[in-house]
Image 1: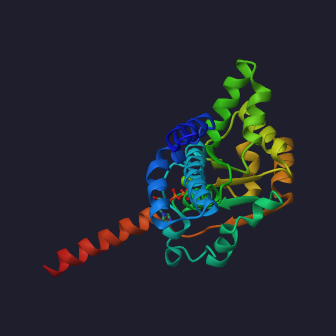
Image 2: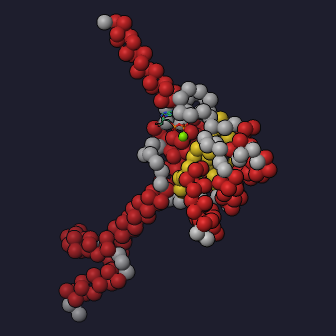
Image 3: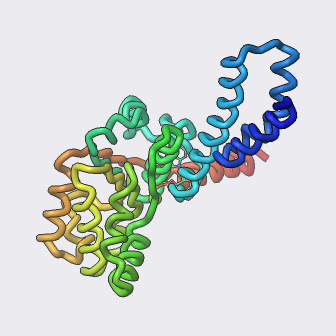
Length: 261
Ligand code: ADP
Ligand code: MG
């Protein structure tokens, strides 16, 4: 068999195995290998590394798409000096994602604008970077999706969907009171994930006012809190809204400029 037909067959094998990146890199790498007098195993290793990198990149991109994180902010972008009630050591520990291993839940509680969503999203990006499946949704989006699922007879599939990711971020619980049906949907999602996967939840309501989220259904609120808090880290953030803070800083600077002129 000639070198040319070997080459053709090798291309065909790579195409059959859907190793497109390796197939594409093959001619250049063969030339290089000849020039550098690479041994068989060294050559094969380099060729496969090209494919491994390409697959890894695709998997990363697909995890990132799936996660649906609403902003690109990472934990490194969080300004801890601006938010003294957030312990940087705690966030650094959470960023190791060890909390996911035993399905610990995470509650960010605080008024609007203090960075709850930013921290949750930052953890989401950390999870994606670590090759973990994460999914971001808001409480009202989750409720709407469950509502549609119930109407269309896809309840079980939808529960499986929300049970799937290692980390499920549910943003903005409590901003709007959830109708009974929505509260029950959220409760069931939390129950399906109980001890299996972490829920990262952000809310403006202190735990004592959780009855309100559930339309004063104390039973559901209590049962939900049991499951959420059984294994959990609660991060209470009190402090000024970051937006208001930068707004105030700008206003202050403008006032000074005007006063100085
Ligand atoms: P919350 O979810 O608590 O209402 P967000 O996370 O949406 O607050 O934060 C509001 C805005 O302020 C966002 O644009 C966010 O990126 C920014 N922000 C809040 N806290 C910080 C912080 N400590 N460092 C940098 N940006 C922050
Ligand atoms: Mg928010």
